[in-house]
Image (tube, rainbow, N blue to C red; front, side, top):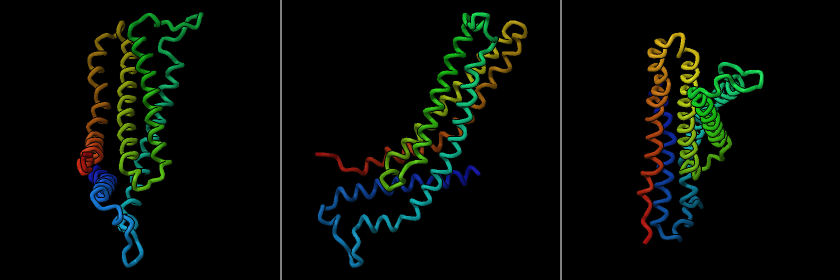
Length: 222
């Protein structure tokens, strides 16, 4: 399944590279040639668009499927961290103040939960921006790759922050009665974050290199 995912992701990267290539070629060609028409009364841009229409359509399909999957994950994280913010560990006293408000782990819990909420919301907005994009050739140049990269990075931070909030809650409840339980649980907290990073980093790296390394095709301004 991972091979299929990478093969489909190359549709976006290849479309991105073709668009860079077209703009680089246009920058070297005399302006009069850009609007010159062939025997079929088509400009070079129109020929390019028709020749790669299927590639753009496949790239759009992959991008929408990917964004929909990440949107579901981001929405799930938002639901969890938002609900947790109003059910603080340890409950509240008669004045409505959390019982663990003076504890350092509780401060870490609140800060990490807020960071998880903000980053997951940002990630959700990025993926929604992908779903509502026009999917023109120019969108594959910078807009779509940047939204996907920013969405992946913010989702990574949201997952990491959620795990930190969970760890702080576990410490609050177990630090006194069963302190020894914290030691085997602590390394396990890193597993989800590490897996997400290892699984998504190749895609993130490929998109970054395809988006910004291709800019070397552009002629330097003199």
